[in-house]
Amino acid sequence: MPYYTMQDNEKLYVREFGQGQPVLVLSGLGMQSWQWLPFLYALKNQFHFIIPDWRGFGRSSQCAIPQLDAISSHWQDLSTLIDKMQLKDFQLIGYSMGATTAMHGMQYGNLSEHLRSYLHIDQTPKITVDDSWQYGLFGQEHQQFKLLLKKISTFLNQHSTTVFIEDLSEKSRNKLVKIWAEFIAFQSSNKISPFLFKLAEKQPKLQKYVLPIHRLDYLKWYIDNYLYHKEDYRQTISQLNCPTTFFSGEKSTLYPIQGQKIIAKSVANSHQVIFKKSGHTPLINEPIKFTRALHLFLTNRSSP
Image 1: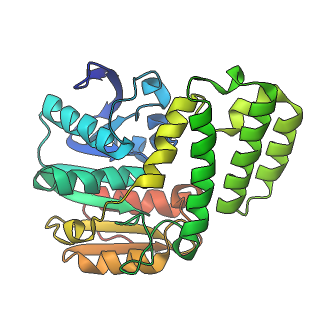
Image 2: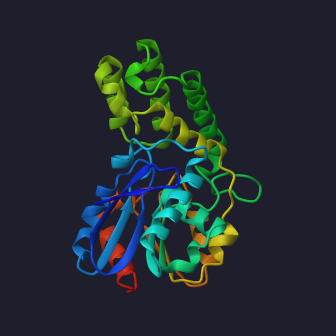
């Protein structure tokens, strides 16, 4: 399982397994490459899976942060990987932030030219909500969400010289945990989360585990990516010529299903699979259906 040298000489970890037709898999924010194994390993004799750990996560957690926004950086790393591995005519799976990276590569690079087929999992082509698009991140609650992002970003800017949460003062740690608890509560109806945050307030050693990233500089990098992201990929993805499949959670609060249906219909050679019991994470909410549909996509059969 090799590391590949990126343009800035940082070593990006890329998990590879299987043999056959190449499949490039782009994870969502906070995921690590091993989390795809339960869904893909059964097809290792038919496909060569290539799954990078994004900077800040997994075995790429120590990569330096470049002077680029996260999505531009991910595409730069991905483009470098494609060139180094000499990948052509491959299948691509993009989930959430991974799908945004894929669309960025279609818009600003030549990614579309290499695709045999594309699977787009629960993501909008435009993060921002405005008069031209009502189905960005959190839909009608987009502005409220951005205020929370701004609150976190401001805190992290005030502590820009601190790398790890455990290096903050007790008062600052508690403040960050409280802000993050508010952020999570906005996103989820999960009743377990409030309990975990209350426990973390009483047990400082647990505080770093309630954050998706232990390094504060990386947390700021990703928060700012969603806070200031202005790209619109609607036209770009609508021009895809390869067979394209959309997996969409009908109950997704992050990216309203209405917008996902609009964009799926805009792609000529497309098929959409609706996960009726799922929100933004069909691989967790409906793992059996997700695995079955994923295998059907890879083997070029009709999805359920």
